[in-house]
Length: 174
Image (cartoon, rainbow, N blue to C red; front, side):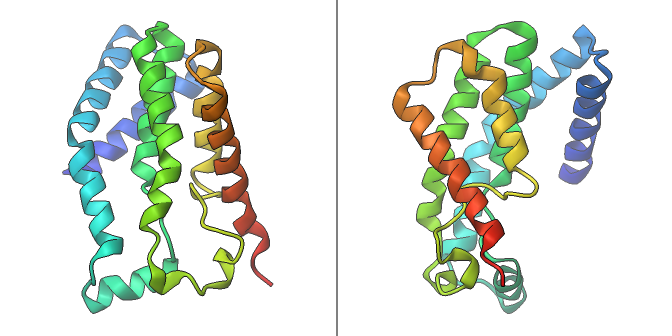
């Protein structure tokens, strides 16, 4: 059910963003989706944290070893939707949600498990977001809201460091 819901959200969002034909119904749907996602965010974050802070069954642990550190990308999707809504509605609450998600995202590196620290891709540090899938969305979310006036100098420094840390991994493989 959740997968179907996420796919539906992605399809509606993609159509409205790329086709430029958003209607008030689509905007309302995105608002409802964002509200629901924000209500379930804490539980999803807790579940994500458990993945790295508790010993997992053998199959899950094998996936973690194979894939390495996977930041909580679902939070970036919150920023994507909220930044889009800010852009379309000029409602500052959406810019605030975006800023809060983007700036706080670097803190999830604190859950980086010791058991992965010896991997070659982390020798320069832990990425804040997945460079291939999420970094463009992370940057785009900031660009959509940067003129809101909500970002402090320290927020911008955190964002710059987050982007730099997320790009370093590209050069880690021989």
